[in-house]
Length: 140
Image 1: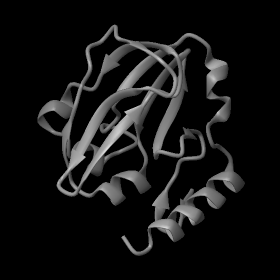
Image 2: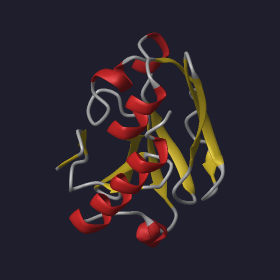
Image 3: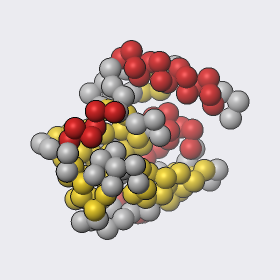
């Protein structure tokens, strides 16, 4: 769905730090959403933690940098990092070019999929959230 020029696929879940989660066969794929990547500008670096790393919900997984921004990627669940998008090491701009496809960041095997219950989903919640974010950042 498109909200004020930002694409937000309805089949994903979102956290308020502008990262999305796709659930496939019990594995979570995580990436930066369209609003986040546009707000950050041209992504120039992505820190890739090692596969096998144990993750804690709410704790930092990694960092993403643009020319004007440095952000943290926070784990949405407790679990294990099972795959990283190695293409981002040489081409971090994939996040800007295809944030929901080739620009994905990590894959996580969650300890408890119920941890995702706090994420945003559904047209009403997404519209309310993005409208508030647009207002919040309109002067940035």
